[in-house]
Length: 498
Ligand code: SAH
Ligand code: F3S
Image 1 (spheres, rainbow, N blue to C red):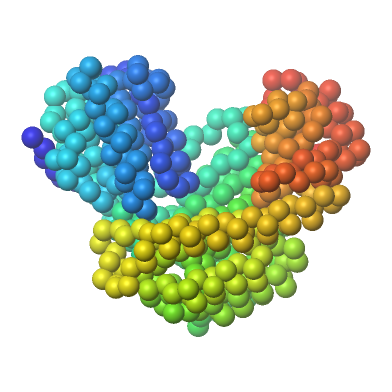
Image 2: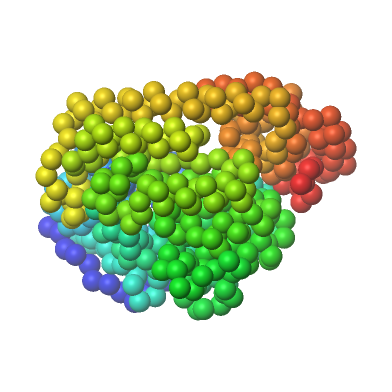
């Protein structure tokens, strides 16, 4: 038996029937999902729960993605696997959350009798309350209401010294409706978080030791403050339909966030890379010299069928403006191959665009038909074998570009925000450069550098990362600070080089 649960106005975490649970949360998909998973874990911990392996858990949460069909297949195999555990332990609660939950709703309950709760991305705050209902005997149900009237934005608690980097949500949903994309249906229309709330969270994170914040949103740079608190940013053209208040938000963060070293954002839409945002890149030292700017295709014909709302030339013009404003800025992108009707010539235009921009990172995907999307109505599907061959050619084009870029950095200095010890070699530290390259810093064992910005010299380029050494000045400064600091403090407030 299944039922769809009606919206309740309360999302309070105070509920009756709360129980201490061991839980396991598995995440598929993008950073927004990782952020949502972390928030679910916190809610469960706050209710007295503790993390466990799936074999010992009382609650298993699968936080799903539905952006491509492959992600959907993954869910099917995961639920099958967990079904075995549920047959052995009928008390086990299985929750499916995320975009698949929103997309499929009650259909998931009908298809998979092992699922107890289908939870939409906007209903995460209700998780403890809903689990309590299940423990009290409620039959399987669905809770997938968009919070259109009073949007909620989940935030991380501030645990001092816990990490040097953090994600902060500034908006959710998407109004673009690119013809291939399911996100507008699974995450709903755009809703923005008030800027004072964003600033308050960032100030708290910075005070707790966070040094790099990544602003999150599906089209993060379409931001508009729902309270109208932001002044117009310099360079802002009020007549430009692509203009937003994102540059003003970046400026407000840069002015107020003491202690922050870097401010990233993901993912912007090219049409909102307006002159005011480019001016912010030129003027704000906090913004790194890297932008992930999804383009999807290099062919105008395909871009039009994708409803991307920009041409190849417009994309290149905006990138050229960014390059002029911020010399050395690097770009990465997303590409879809085999979109319906993509000809060999269209695909060659995409390869040519990749070469022309010199992307240092390309996330390429085979087009996948998604429910509800307008592209389902397009003819001329591209054969799977052609998609696979095109994907290979994308990799063959982008890997040398990435290699050339990394090799060009050998012998140069850069600033690395240290995140912690390297996984493969604990005597090395790992962090990211101002351009977002992964940098391993050699011979840094024993130095208290987590959360610090250090200057390094690049000594070797690997396939996807760099090896570097601290400059003499950085090493001296790091040694001096390490010996003068209490050892238990892992996130010092002073940067070695800034
Ligand atoms: N704006 C979002 C994009 C979400 S989808 C963000 O913040 O990341 C991420 C990427 O998946 C898209 O840029 C696109 O390249 C790819 N993608 C989306 N729908 C797809 C589909 N139907 N088939 C193949 N790839 C797709
Ligand atoms: Fe998807 Fe296009 Fe929005 S890729 S998330 S519909 S900008």
